[in-house]
Amino acid sequence: MKLSIIIPVYNEAETVVQIVERVQNVELDGVEKEIIVVNDGSTDGTDTVLNTLVARWSNPFKVVHHERNRGKGAAIRTALEHVTGDVVITQDADLEYNPQEYPRLLAPFADPAVQVVYGSRNLRTNPRSSLSFYWGGLLLSWLANLLYGSHITDEPTGYKLFRADLVRSLDLESNGFEFCPEATSKVLLRGIEIHEVPISYQPRAFREGKKINWRDGIRAIWTLFKYRFQRQNH
Image (cartoon, rainbow, N blue to C red; front, side):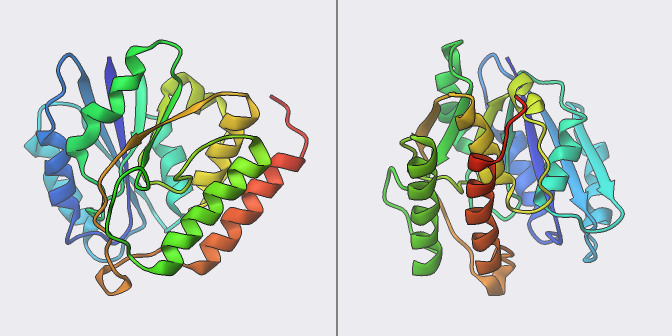
């Protein structure tokens, strides 16, 4: 198996080296890794930091730059153009998620029938960034289950894994954080089960650079409704 790790980055000069090193240090028996970082128009020197990293590793490590900030979804869509792996995982650059959990997240893919795996922060005890984020995440999960007949516990998780052929076929459109509900909606509309694996979580505060906000929550709710009730061509 080959794992493609997509890391969208926006103004993460202080953490991007650490997250790339953590990903590089993950040992996966029998699994090849490629890392694709998309610098989404950063203005804090992230581009310079990334360019210095390219020469440090011999295994596949690619950096793509957006000239302007376009959003997480746009960065993921750009990265997908460069994916050569069998399974794709999204990895945030803010150190909230631990790459050492890749083996656990990949384990379900030993079954060829498994197409999608989400890492759930709610299947084990974790610290919470705030009550509003915690309850907002539960609301999105509940709404997805209500609209699509699923049973997921953490719809907005940052750890989403897909068979590469599947995620490419979803015709993703979102530019921002609504990538998550769009991908969830399109997977569930196809009747594909989303498997969940418990993960750890170390939230950071807005003062530490957290970017998602309540407006993104409203967009996420709208996105779940939009794809549920619009005509699907696939």
